[in-house]
Amino acid sequence: RGRAAAGEETVFTDVTSVKAGAVAWARATKEPRFVPGHPMAGHEKGGPALASAWLFRNARWILTPVKSTSRPALKRVEEAVKLMGATPVRLEPESHDGAVALLSHLPHAVAGSLVRMADGREGTDAAAGSWRDLTRVGGAEPELWTQIFLENREALAREIGSLVDALGGLREMLDRDDREAAREWLVEAQAAKKRLEPEPVAATKTVARGRSSVAREGRR
Image (cartoon, rainbow, N blue to C red; front, side, top):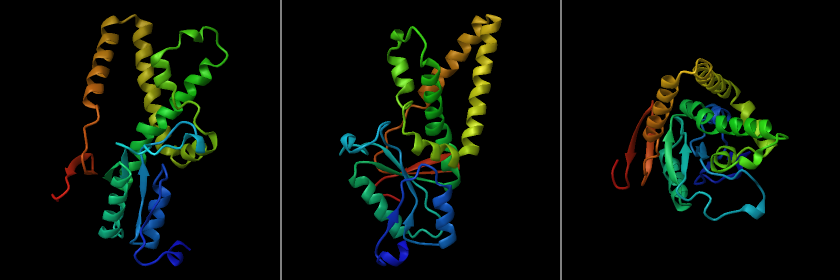
């Protein structure tokens, strides 16, 4: 229906958080004007009252073109993304859902777990900045996030398992009263945080097979 309604010069994209379905459709139809996408921006609460003209400013906007996606269509979507203040990032479709399972979906699962644990407990007056930062998305819209969790259930389940293993290792250190191991755990976490600080991106960024390169305007 979309192809019948759109003109030949029309390009279209989507904004779904899990790309498997959109990419499967793109590959099945070989529609050259469709550019699968996922803006890495949003708000933990919804509704018109929270609309913002700056929602996408400085955000990364993932694009997962497939073999049939035409280069002109991809370039037009990238230009539209830039007009909204975001930075287009090209990512291989197979890499996207695994990446967001860790970087987006798992944090929502953790935040939801934390607020469920704290609900009804006494002593929550001690909550401060770290609690606020970790639980900001704990009240995300249930219908939307049920869909996201289930659409990406295999990748998310793997990441939950990895988190359980990591916390289990820390618990063992505490059970042993192993000060040196606990300190080393925190040293490694601190170093990882520094390595993972986001790099500034000025134009289109292409990510493939775990390696990235930045293609600045005027240079390809």
